Every structure is written in C-alpha cells, then in structure tokens.
Amino acid sequence: MKIAMIGTGYVGLVSGVCFSDFGHNVICVDKNPDKIAMLEAGRVPIYEPGLDAVMARNVTAGRLSFSGDLAQAVDGADAVFIAVGTPSRRGDHHADLSYVMAAAQEIAAAATGYIVVVTKSTVPVSTNRKVQAAIAEANPNLEFDVVSNPEFLREGSAINDFMMPDRVVVGVETERARKVMAEIYRPLYLRDFPIVTTDLESAEMIKYAANAFLATKITFINEIAALCEKVGADVKQVAKGIGMDGRIGNKFLHAGPGYGGSCFPKDTRALARIGQEHASPLQIVEAVVKVNEEVKRRMIDKLLDLCDGSFNGKTVLVLGVTFKPNTDDMRDAPALTIIPAMVGGGAKVRVIDPQGRQEGEALLPGVEWVSDVYTAAEGADLLVTLTQWNEFRALELSRIASSMAVPRMADLRNIYSAEAAAEAGFVAYDGIGRPRIAERDAV
Ligand SMILES: NC(=O)c1ccc[n+]([C@@H]2O[C@H](COP(=O)([O-])OP(=O)(O)OC[C@H]3O[C@@H](n4cnc5c(N)ncnc54)[C@H](O)[C@@H]3O)[C@@H](O)[C@H]2O)c1
Image 1 (spheres, rainbow, N blue to C red):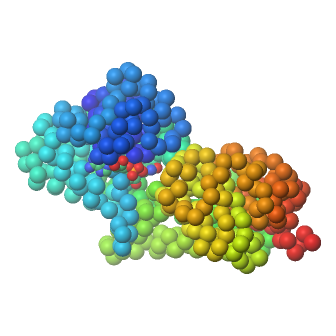
Image 2 (image 1 turned 90 degrees about the horizontal axis):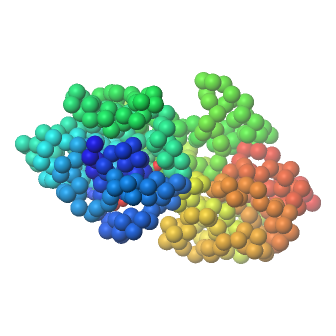
Image 3 (image 1 turned 180 degrees about the vertical axis):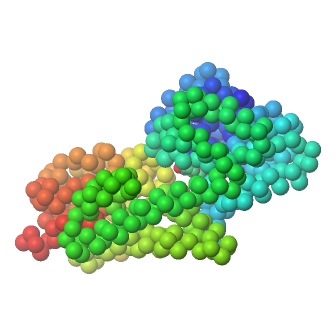
C-alpha cells in the first residue's frame, strides 16, 4: 500500500513509522519545515522511546520518507491519513477542526484517482461526514471514501501500543474502503488483534467515550484520595482492593495531581460541548472536568501547607514537569498550574526533568533548570515529586534530606511513603490520599 500521513506529531509520526514497518510505502507530510528538516536528517522531533530505531530502519529500507509537499505525497496514494491536531478552541472548548478541514481541502485539490481518506485525529461525531462533503464539493469528479480510524496509542509506549493494540477501530461504509483498510492493517489481522468495524459516527464516539471514561476513572480515585486523607484511609490500599474486582480493573487507579496531557483535558471538554449542543448533557463528564481543576488546586494547598502558609522566600525543588514519564509532552501538564502558583507566590523553584526542558522552558518562566537532584536539593525547603520518571523512584532520600534547609516532601505521585521519608530524616511528608507526617507531629 502507498500511504500519505498528514501531520508528523505524536500520532502521525508514530503511525507513519509503524505502517512503514508493516511493509507499506509511507510518506509523512508536515507543514512545519523545521520538523521535516529534522526528520530528513534522521532526527526525531519528539521524545518517544524506541521511535528513532524503527524510523531509521524503515528509512534505510526505502519504505519511509518525509516531505513538506502534501500534493506530491497524496497523488497516487491508496490512502491518506489525517493526523493533524484538534486542540481545544479558545473560548468555547470545542475541538478546533480548522486543521482537519484545511487538510481535507488540500487532499481534495491534490488527489487524482480513487483514494481512501482516513481520519486519525480525534474528531467530534459528524466530522467525517463534513470531511466527505468538503472533498466532494471541492473535487466533484474525485472517487474517494472517508474512513474514521481513531488512535488509542499512549505517549511513552506508543510503538508497542500501535504494534500490539487492544483493538483497532475502523468506521467504514463501503466495501472498497474496507478492503484497503484490511490491507493496511493486515499484519494485525494476521496476529488476531481485534479489529472493530463500525459506522463513521460510532467510531468517532468510541474515541471520545474511551478517553472520557479513563479521565473519569482517574478523577474518581483522586476524589476518593481526598476523602482518604480526611478519614485516615490509604488510597493505595483502597485502589488495590477495588482494582482486583474484574469489573473495575486495576489500571488508571493511581491517585495523583490531576490528569493532564494532550488528550484527556481537551477531549473531555469537547465531549461535554458535544453533549450540550445536542441537548444531551454529559453531567458526569462535566463534573470530571470541574473536579480535575479542583484536584490541581488542592495540590497547591498541600504545597502551601508544607511551606507554612507562604511560598515567599522558599526554595522548592520539583522533580518532573512533563504530564507523565517517558514523554517530552507538556500540554496541559499539572506542572503548568502548580509551578506558576509557587513562582507567583515568591518561591525560588528549581526544576529537573529528563526530557521536559525543551518544551518547558518557554512555558515555565522564572524557574531554574537543574540536572542533578542531589546538588539541587542543597538548601531547599521543599521537595516535590510531580512526574514519576523511573529515575526519581529510587533516590537516596537520606542524602537529599541531610542537604535540605528543611527536609519536607510533597509526594504528588505516591512514589515514597511517610515511613520511608521519616526514616530518611524528612520532618514533613505529604502524599496523595495516604498517611502523612506533619512537622508538628515530628517535633
Ligand atoms: N498525542 C496523543 O497521545 C494522541 C493519542 C491519540 C489520539 N490523538 C489525536 O491525534 C491528533 C494529533 O495529535 P498529536 O498529539 O499527534 O498532534 P501534534 O500537535 O503533535 O501534531 C500535529 C502535526 O500536524 C501538523 N499539521 C497540521 N496541519 C497540517 C497540514 N495541513 N499539513 C501538514 N501537516 C499539518 C502540525 O504541524 C503538527 O506537526 C489529535 O486529534 C489528537 O487528539 C493524540
């Protein structure tokens, strides 16, 4: 199959690289010339473990190339995937479809023979029909079909997720397009990965419903964590106890500082808007959006409490700023709410993140970027774990505690425990939904 992939972001690049690894001929297109120049030089513009090696081997094999020229990539392709961004629209939180519709127009102008136009971007119900109508209007003689093929990969494990998916969802309405999609995903069919075939609207809805459900699960355990703190229960034990129930499952039950990232915040808001527009409000999703904001604010209260009620003049060391480990993505990361609150309150904030600096520098003005935890801890009043990168999981806590001005820890990912912190010499420790040590208890 000859495939054109429009957009070389987290989804487009991973999908394009993996399709070429399936044996297809793929041209990845982006309108950002810097990205194309990097890719042509063999460099990956994002941090995604394992992507560089799969990319290099398919470029070498001659199956994968990069281009800024959409028309040339689309002409003669069997399928063109739209994998451009659908960010939250300013003001109303609708999914901004301008990039998707612009790509559709460009495809209509470039295609000359039968082509399957596949939407991989996360788009509200009815968008694929709009794409269909726009192409038909712009190029009435073109033979084409539109397919909805939402993507479920997770940043940080994207290659695995793409190559070994829980399922592939294909919204398709003609036999001709179904055959093209079956050919594209043949390696997955052969290995018996489930392929769910639906109509266009159901495929679009599956993606939003899946993300909203996962965001709900995280938010649920975050609210339970807040209650655990009040009643003296331990949310880690609670999550374990409920997660063993097969109907509930143990994934997405880690209490933390609120969900962030490139998908959950914008997709929950967009789904809430879709519900309102169709006079079928999604009250649970609306509550999730609201509670998640409160969870982030609750984190600031925790930190303030550990700083004796004022950030002014305090030195804080923050471990991790990306929205989760193994990515450089900072979009809607809780760090973007929590760190500015401390900087604004007069704290001197030192920040360390294995991959987040390039994105984070512009987003987090006023912080000092450091690289070594132990030297950065010297003279600090508070240590905050904000992203659970592996390298933050086994720190020598006693070494850190002994060099801090006042050894206090806010463990917003529950990496450590009150006992471990106390043993290492911390005088105060606060996690999420777990027993804490307050300074007054220690003295
Ligand atoms: N990031 C994820 O983990 C993830 C997971 C599943 C689904 N999605 C969905 O996939 C879509 C893409 O997300 P992303 O995170 O990869 O976005 P991104 O912002 O990282 O990348 C989008 C890319 O598209 C390019 N682009 C935009 N318009 C273009 C055009 N007309 N021609 C060529 N290139 C163009 C941009 O320059 C950019 O490089 C979104 O709808 C998102 O919701 C994302």
